Amino acid sequence: QVQLAESGGGLVQPGGSLRVSCTASGFTFTNYVMRWYRQAPGAEREFVASIEPYTTATNYGDSVTGRFTISRNNAEKMVYLQMNNLKLEDTAVYYCNARNRYTGRDYWGQGTQVTVSS
Image (cartoon, rainbow, N blue to C red; front, side, top):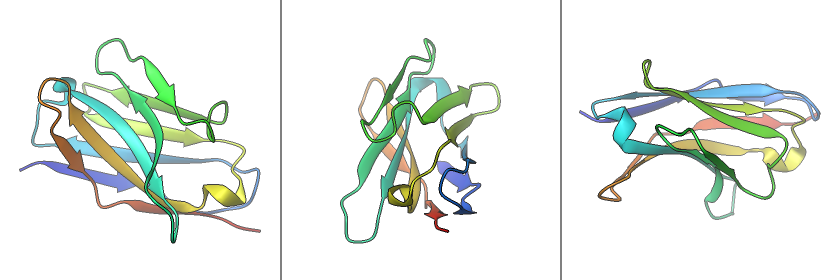
């Protein structure tokens, strides 16, 4: 059974840091590009970052470039999002996504809430 489980969300002050994690199970992790998306209240889901399985090449959304870092551990089937210099507008539910490199099939986690507030 495919599962993506996010963890590590919470409340943080502006300028602070937070790391969210995603634990994957039930599929061949190295066949999947891993991504983070986020969705703020009343907004559409927004691409945050992605990482390739072997080259670990990364890509970031314009609003997080230079502040967020995505990484993965293929042996542990984990993907991480390190978020630094957080801003109020980073407040959202953060979702882990796995996309098969060959078929395009998508899996989604349930999301973890990140709230940036003073």
